[in-house]
Image (cartoon, rainbow, N blue to C red; front, side, top):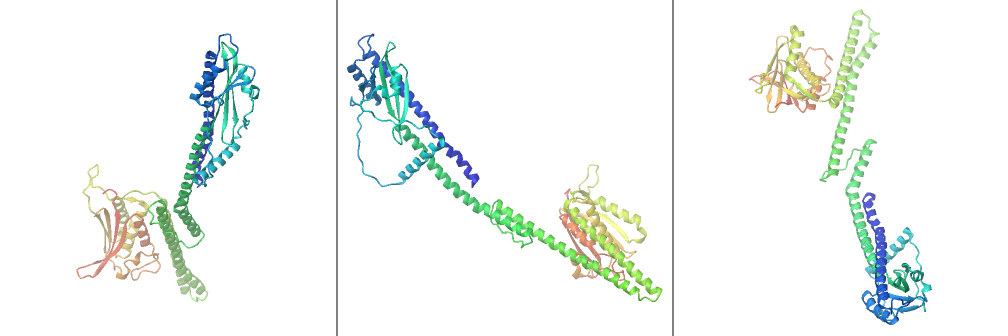
Amino acid sequence: MAVNLFALIFLGVGVLYVDQVQNTLLQSRIDELVKDANIMAGALGEAATDDPDSTELLIEPAENILTRLVGVTQIRTRYFGLNNELLIDSRDLAINNVEIEDTMPRELGIGDFWEIVNREVSVLLDIIQKREILEEYHEIENEMATDYPEIMEALAGEESSRVRKLNDNTDIITVAVPVQRFRRVLGALMLSADTGDIFVAVQDVRLTIIQFFCASLFITLLMSLFLAKTIVRPVLKLARSADQISLGGKSDIPDLSSRNDEIGDLSRSLKDMTEILAKQIDAVASFAADVAHELKNPLTSMRSAIETMEYAKTEENSRKLREIISDDVRRLDRLITDISDVSRLDAEMSHSLKHQVNLTAQFETLVDIYLTTQKDNLPQIHLDIKKRRFKTKDGKPAPYCVRGLEGQLSQVARNLIDNAISFSNKDSNIWIKMHRRYNMVEILVEDEGIGIPVDKLESIFDRFYSERPKGEAFGKHSGLGLNICKQVVEAHGGEIYAQNRTDKSKKIIGARFVVLLPLENN
């Protein structure tokens, strides 16, 4: 509201400017009266004398001249002789007749209200501007030149003027000039006129400004209330809701999404952000509970083994207990390592910048490393990358490229290959296939293992879920590998899911993991 009212201050300053205009108009009126007075004095000096050596005017010719001139100008004119006496007054010539009409008191209306406001504003402006207090004007019976300082100055040969207060609303201007004949002063001519028309004009302008100011103020207040209701209050509601959430209160952001404006956008953004934060908090809490549960199992086993150690009577029993403790320690180390990888993965996915990743070269390199370092202990790994129609500048088929984090995508590939290896015999096969599927690159990792229980095709991607082959030692896997794969793939805008490979008789002959990632170079 303060900002909206600030513009009205300049409008209020306009009232002060009107007073400056009034002073300008007043000075213009004085200049006009001086000009008229000089014309009349010149006419009297030339035409109302007997000869060039005359020391006084002829009254009858002077009255005739003033009668004609005052009839045109309608300005009260008085002529004083060298003996300071008033010799001619235009009022005595019956030129400026004033008719006074008595009127009945009228009822107050809206116009009177604005007049009262205007008058009070005028009084206030007089106080603010500290205007000069004018001498009051009084009609004097048998007036003499000595009653008017400006007449005395005119008789001395100087032009002079005065402004006096006539009543509460009007001032009166008096101008005196010498009447001369060949630079000989014959008398003084005084013209007087009130400033009622100037006052009325200024008051009309001031009243218009005041009315416009009041109308603008009323509209501004309405607009401020409207803006407060439609903008400020909703923003305050959103702010209070955010404060409640930060203090641990209920995450209830007002739903203003129906508004098709910035407030609606802000409401939707805050609501979405709150929901995401709530999901992340729930995920962290769930993750912490899962971690605590997974860590508790090996710790419980270790404690039982240590407590039983005291009762072991043979070296064989002691050795078995030590092996159990050693296995639990390794299991704890593996769990902590994998948990650390998951935590680091979340941070890297949130803050790292994505770059172009060449999946073709990445899988070729990984398979080459597996075959070079573990060839004698691995199943047969087959890499099948379907060539693309697009060619590079050197004429070779374009590789499959995605935008993402190379380290995390490489970890997905290693986890899927390691998972296939753990479910495969040495004399079995693993197929890694890569081809285009619409605007995605599809990666298949297939094995000839025992497959996946049909009701566990989705559960295998949960944290700490482990479905291992029979005969494999318990605790060798943390159950986080496939969960990491899912997080990384989804963070790259892709999809991962599992299937069972079947033969013609619908018998399960292995597992298949499918990864879809959006291609960058379509």
